[in-house]
Amino acid sequence: MAGDLHNALAEAEAQVARLKREIAQGPCVEFGHDWQSIGGKNAACGDGCGCSVPVNVCTKCGDCDYGDNADADEIIKSCAESESDPQP
Ligand SMILES: [Zn+2]
Ligand SMILES: [Zn+2]
Image (cartoon, rainbow, N blue to C red; front, side, top):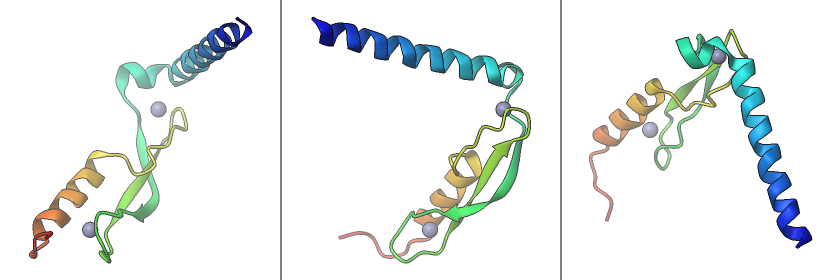
C-alpha cells in the first residue's frame, strides 16, 4: 500500500528531525540547558487570576521552554493552594 510507505516515510522523517535536534542540542542533553529568562506569559491557571510564569530560552542551543519549567509549576501550585473557595 502506498499509504503504508507514506506513513513509514513520515515516521522516518520525524525520527531524523528528532535526532538532528538532539545533535544540535549536543551538550545540553548531557549537561542540561542553560536557561535564561526572556520574559513571562499568562499562567492560565484559573479564572481571572493574573499569575504569570517565566519563559526561558537556552543560551546554548536556543531551545525555548514556553513557560514549561519548575518555576511555573511552583507558581501554578501556590495559586491553586491560595484559592479559598473550592470548585463546585
Ligand atoms: Zn540547550
Ligand atoms: Zn493563578
